[in-house]
Image (cartoon, rainbow, N blue to C red; front, top):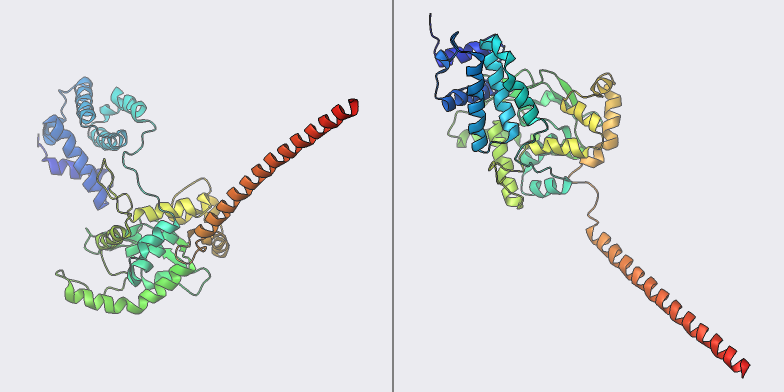
Length: 374
C-alpha cells in the first residue's frame, strides 16, 4: 500500500471536494495540521482499518479538551472541528457516525466570537476620513455606501462605475486575490455579479480621485521596492493589504485606534464599513441584497428593476451620508436641554408658589370665620 505524504493527502481532499479558493485552502490546511500536531500523529498514516470508531472518538475528545485548556472560543472551536469533520468523513465515511459531532453541535450552539468589532456611525467614519486624502476618501466612501468587501473595492475598474445615473451605479463583478498570478479574479466571493449604488459624496470623491490617479500610479512605481504594473487600469491600483494599511494609519490619527484585548486585532478595520452599511442604511433586507447576501427578501429585490432599486436606495441614502450629512446640532440640543431644565424648574417654583398662595387663602378664610363668630 502506498502511504501518501501529508500534503498530498490534504491536497487530494481539496481536489475531491472542489475547494479552490486560496484563503479557504490555507485556513483548512492550518486546521488539519494543527489537529494532528496536537495529537502528535501523522496525517498520512492516521487512517487505517485497525482503528475503531472509539479510537477516533477519543482523539477528538482529547483535542477538544486541549482547546478548552487553551481557552479557545466556542465559535473558533466550531469552525475548527467543522473542517476536521469534513476532512475525516471525506477520508473515511464511517466517521460520520461518531457521537462527537452531535455532542459538539449542542455544545457550541449559539456561540459568538470573543472579539468585539467596532460598528462605526457616520460621525466616527467622518472623524477617520478627516485624516485622509482624495484616495482614501474615494476608497472608503465607496465601500461605506455599497457595503462591498475590501477585495471587491480594490478590483473595481472605471467601467464598473457609472456616474451619469442618479444615484451613481457600481457593478461588483470581481475580487482581488494577491495570491494568484492574475491578482484580479473574474468572480466575487459569492461568484455573482451585483449592482450597487453610491452616495453623491462618494461620487464626488471618486471624480476628484480619478483626476489624481495616474499621477499617483506613476509616483508609486518610482517609489516602490516592488515591481508595479504601469498598465494597471484599476481605480485603486494597489493591494488589499495596502488599503488596510491606509485605513489603519487614519484610524490611529483619529484617536479611535483600539485593539481587542482577547485577539489583539484592530476593532475598527475596513470590514466594519460593511457592517456600518448593514446597520445604518435603514432597510436591512435591501442592505443584505446590495451586499450580496441571500436573505428572505433577496428574491424580491433580485426581481426588482434597477431603476426601482435606485429609487429605494435614494430614499435611504441620507442615512449613510458621511461628510455632507445632517449639520452638527450638538450645541443646539444642549441649549434646548438646558432650557427644558429651566422650564421644569420654573414650573416647580410656580407649583410651590401656588400651594403657598392657597395656604394663605385658606388661612384668611379661617380668620374670617373666626371673626364672624366673634
